[in-house]
Image 1 (cartoon, one colour):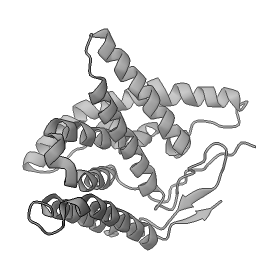
Image 2 (cartoon, rainbow, N blue to C red):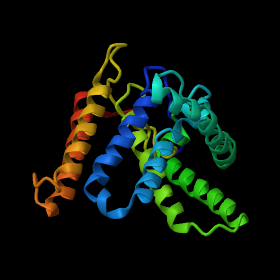
Image 3 (cartoon, one colour):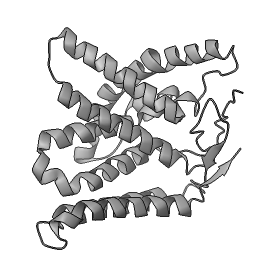
Length: 256
């Protein structure tokens, strides 16, 4: 049986929060190994997480990946100005080159039972896996056309992209609309209570905990706070604990 998953308008995680939560989670997990793997690989992985943390919202016209960020001051404003140019290019590739074709195929295969909708195909585990695979194929074809051999770099970026998309779904599972992880085979979803109002600061607090942990585990080894061998496990446990706290505090539960 095929199910649809209604998106509802019960509040969403903002694009900047998706980026902060996704990127800081990645930095936290990479912090113990950053000194040994080289800056270029770290930048590629973080860039992949950055784009991936916004990619599932390419099915919404007002999403950050379709319009970029705006506002801010100083360096932040300069950064935001560049996203207005770069992000929509990626967003349109994902929407028209991946989301619509795959949604059309799904619509045909289900005889019209599953139609394109926000918090549908793009907000499912199979959806982000297929999106990552097709995006990887497009990027690989473009590199091959220009005779650029960069498969290792593409793999690192692709891994970051999928990780960022996964964290996007995990964060959206905390909202009232929730996420149907098993869509289109299941209509059951994980949903929570975020945001509870305009002044809900839980996402900011969560990002602060992740950022503080990233700094801590970046210096824990060199300063002798922890044994070098224990730093990666410590970072993983700390990141998992932060996510568990956020999921618990937003009351995530299975429904539908």
